[in-house]
Image (tube, rainbow, N blue to C red; front, side, top):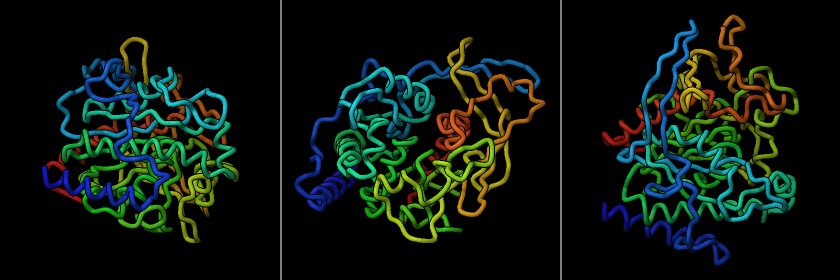
Length: 363
């Protein structure tokens, strides 16, 4: 462990020198939204759930945060700040705590959760960032500094799962490309990356290329050091869909590598090898903190022309249709529910990947 820590320190020192004096130093203070032992902590708590079957049956299962979880999760939340201007302040807001409680708290049963506060691009900032590089760079530097602090002061050689949605996934795309993909010592810590709703790109017909040159898409539940990425739609996306084609505004905003022959990555979290399968949906509930709806949705990855997406369907005969997630915008599909629509599948995947990583598998 001591040697790995030294190697990580050297790696981070080299990385800091490479990005120049304008970069946020690795030792800069981090404001944490979530960190083990911190109070309050929206990423930890009661995970008791009512499992609602298609026949109407209901069974309560217990659950909660595991403070002894064997690996860590590093979570970057999506665009939620109501702040004016282009970048949010570096302070915890109710919106951040709320989305963390919905998106990442369930993972605390399988990992210790770390989540930094960052000066995220506001909704206004997204539009400005297309022409003003500094808007995205400010958000990214905060997350990069937090990641380096985590590695130096918190990690201790533990495996780590990256979790990001929307803007959070877009920021982690750049973090993986610059801080993890080219560095074997750091890459060896990666259990997996759940970069959902953020337009990860690969070479057409391949599980690598595009955003990353070494880190591949996950193809098996016991594969480690790999990426799960998808955006969910419950109807064929329109031509102006936000999360389905490689020539997209998200990638242009974060200055991701371009070129021809790219497509949006899609890995079905419930069946990494492909095929239509039932999902295990988890959502906040009123009777217990959570409710699971196994089989309410089925999903498979689809590619048509230049578009790729996770195609989600629900049976009209299912009596649980009243709990379906609403489509907010046709161009975004089920974007705000990308994680929860397959939450228990993702948690099981992290559990199996953690077991493989702890058994000695390394990317």
